[in-house]
Image (cartoon, rainbow, N blue to C red):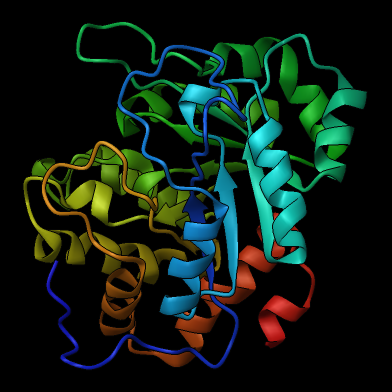
Length: 292
């Protein structure tokens, strides 16, 4: 990915939160719960800290990688290591109760992830929990504890299940810009429905542009990004998906994506809102994120 600024990586004077990163450590120390569907990299907390520091990112949201499944040992250990700089999104199945969720929340885990993406052969991705589990079991306890549901699913699937999500009343965060298909175009009813949900404040969306740009390029994603910012910047969260596992081609870097975000969102107040204020609100960071 080309750095379009032509300058050194940006250093923001206020807090910047990358709302979607992963860590992978030695599997002999932190074992996988299931056979991975991809080759996990060695990308421990030390690498994350180095790369975010280089980019000027002060806070992160750690999302549980699928190979670890319900084994949250590495996630919790990393949250403890990073302290107030990090919050987490975990994975749990129907066996966890309100007390278990409260314990996770106390360890820094702000929400649970639910996945409806399938492998190329049609199987569920190992280490994931379905939306049915949210609807049938977990929603009341998530609501009681004050945690949110993070969803990784094709936009068409999310919209098909939206009535059930509304009934669940749990706050919803969508991964990877809602996983819309850019080749369907800006005016497609699915994307327009996503914009309507944003305008209503019914959903939060992570602006992880690299996962939508595959096969079409970053310039093709700019109109969708602009439309989301215009629809409701109060419900947007900036994200990278570091360390870019299963990425086709040369992956970007955190600082390149942050530099591109500044080009696409030239208004400094809008940038501050998306990079700092919104994650403070959604993930429960200390107030120093918005003020640093």
